[in-house]
Image 1 (cartoon, rainbow, N blue to C red):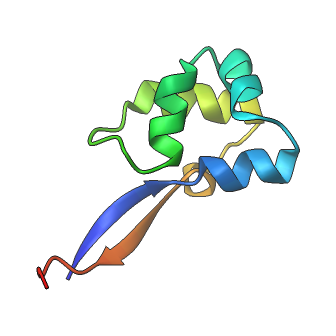
Image 2 (cartoon, rainbow, N blue to C red; image 1 turned 45 degrees about the vertical axis):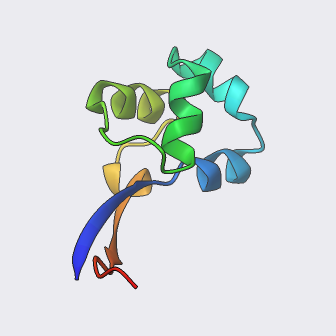
Length: 76
């Protein structure tokens, strides 16, 4: 088993009652980039984006934004 980094954008915007588009406006991160992060479709995480998201949402602990999950690398 290995670990995978996930970005918890969906939960954060739901908690705050804002849309992904609104987060894009507040953070100055492209909507498409936020969507890819939220849906786990981005292979690389730009930590400048994480900093902008944290700043826009008033988050001081990176663990509120990213997490590790166990993933099974075996193919069925």
